[in-house]
Length: 288
Image 1: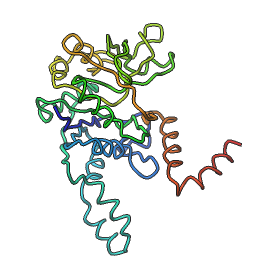
Image 2: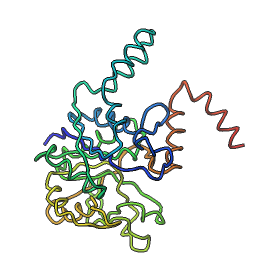
Image 3: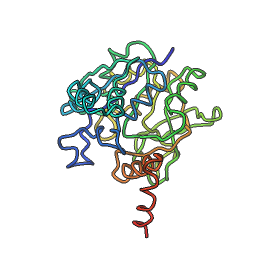
Image 4: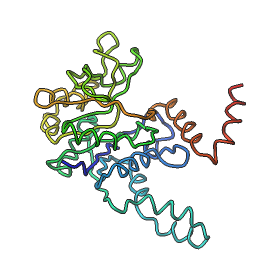
């Protein structure tokens, strides 16, 4: 039951960031000096993940190149004596893990993207990370969740509280407290209006799923937005297996949103000692 594999759905077009994402994958947008996707991959590796599975689409070659060796660049850095940058570039290639790529041929939703990885995942529990949800934490969130999974042995998802008027942006759960940081899910609904939302507990982009989820995703039933929704498949899974929501320690930034992306850049930059002393005076000046 060890969680060895992590699926990264990265086939989206990133239309909310046009024109920046016209020729560049949205997952390659930088937060300080690293692309969003690298933070998510580093989180997975720190949690002990052994296989990274990217579900890509057209126009994602830059993402694939980022996690590949660039011998020409390494040679230039070595010749110029830039050993720190050379080590940084080389460290992006996971040594103890390997990366697999598969394609989502049609933009049919998050649930469909995960279903596209079924043959690679096989018959074992696995993680799903959505790079748009960038989380700043002392202990990687996926590591926190894996520790809880070792006790629960059931599908689970990271959850946060959101303002009631924002429930239409998330999958929302109806749940009851189970343990210290865990809720047992009674029902789930994708993007309900505030008046129909069962709570303000919203699902964000970290999941641990049992392989049974593929049988529900394989039915290819469409939901909100005419897409195959993971939330709908998990709601069906509830009839067979328990599902839990996990409240993690950390601060989440929605990097699929322009304001959230800018806030992530500021917060992560302020977390860097070499940048903080320059940025703080500038921020105070701008605010004034």
